[in-house]
Amino acid sequence: MPEQVTSQQRPTIAITVGEPAGIGPEISLRAAWQLRGEVNCVLVGDAAFLAQTAETIDPEMRLAAVSWMAVSDAGLPRFPADRLAVIDCPLAEVVVPGRLDSRNGRALLQMLDIAIAGTQMRLFDAVVTAPLQKSTIYDAGVAFTGHTEYLAQKTATPQVVMMLAGGDAPHPLRVALATTHLPLKDVPAAITVEGLLRTIEIIHADLQAKFGIASPRILVTGLNPHAGEGGYLGREEIDVIGPALQAAQARGIDATGPYPADTLFQPKYLQDADCVLAMYHDQGLPVLKHASFGRGVNITLGLPIIRTSVDHGTALDLAARGLGHADCGSMIEAIRTAAHMAAASASSRKS
Image 1 (cartoon, rainbow, N blue to C red):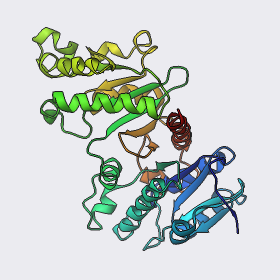
Image 2 (cartoon, rainbow, N blue to C red; image 1 turned 180 degrees about the horizontal axis):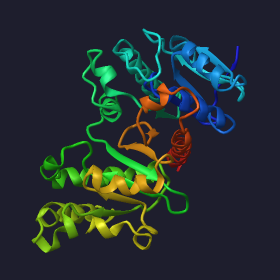
Image 3 (cartoon, helix red, strand yellow; image 1 turned 90 degrees about the vertical axis):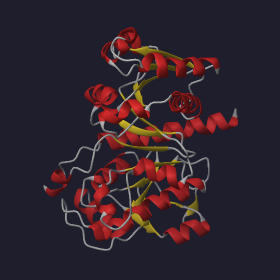
Image 4 (cartoon, rainbow, N blue to C red; image 1 turned 180 degrees about the vertical axis):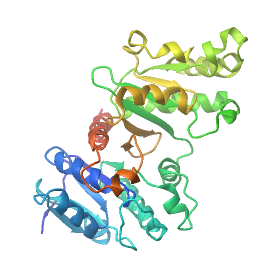
């Protein structure tokens, strides 16, 4: 029987392998195998399917399947670094690469449930998620809107913040969003003083607790062109964003703005910033993805657990072409980021 994991071992990260018909299983296996010496990666997915995939990728890749029932009862066994643990979540149907099958939808939710529960039980230090196809779960009869919303619901978190990170130290680019997947016409009404203040507070708290940044500096964009140009191009900066920033500053948070988004993303402004808060999805993320697509990391702030993910989707077209076409770079960065956040969080709890 393998030895039990202790807190002195490599950080233990649960990796949900995502939509089985997409590139998630391949990039999860490749990244976990590459990082096996520095991170104890525990894959959560169909063990037989992953073993078959691993054999095709690299015959030297060795997996060890365990059941969630055994893990939840007795703890996570420790395997040597030349073997990847897999918590088995059997799929209902055989996987055809590139072809979605809603009959596998509920198994995908089971993967998430196991990763969340295991992290809450301190079996895992963090969760990393490979991309899902929302329609697979929705067509299985579950009203699923995405990883972030599901994680918030399962952890009873009233508000979370989406942040993407990319680029190299010492000045990585981090971009958080005040709103996420909304039609552009709905964005102004969704930005309120109270909501924006809470978003800034979440960013500040997690940069401290999960990134180890003692005094985070947050730069906040305006909503309108030229940050409203004194009200000539819109009043949201005056009526909403400005008051939220004043309230944050009164609470000791170094959050400044609102800055025009078209000029803010320059090295001379970003070099001393720890995060940029953009007002909507396509205001902040094109810059981040241009700078680091394929190496970016999606991070959910505000959760009681650490969760990171890749910066791309399921890539069904690549999966349909067979193994060997997917780039696991973003998954590698997501795992490393989760491990670094886990270490920072452990240090924060001790201090």
